[in-house]
Image (tube, rainbow, N blue to C red; front, top):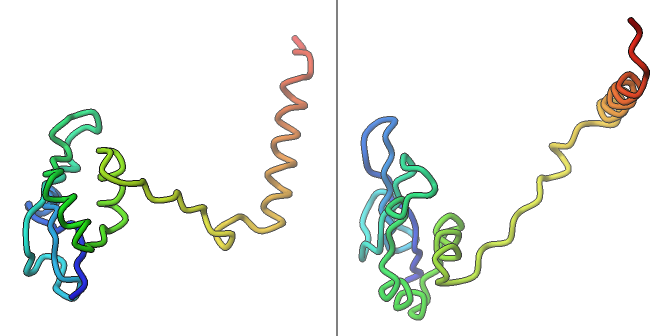
Length: 122
């Protein structure tokens, strides 16, 4: 049985609230879980301490047993000092502007710099 530490969604429509749980990877997102390890409230400001609440000793136990955290939970654990943060993924090259768009952007920035450097007439 492969275990994952992941988020399950609760709350109402447009007011999300997530529980951090350890569950079998085959169970549905909001379905059966083994143990609740914390909460995440994205509606609170990032500076608030109660935005992410974790049970560190239980998380360490499940990590030792072999549970794998999801990418979002791994970020929370990294912020709390319970594990390494995931590597920041680079934007894929597919989504980069094409050659003509890049040329137009360079021309526009060059024209903007030339206009800014020119003396004002008045």
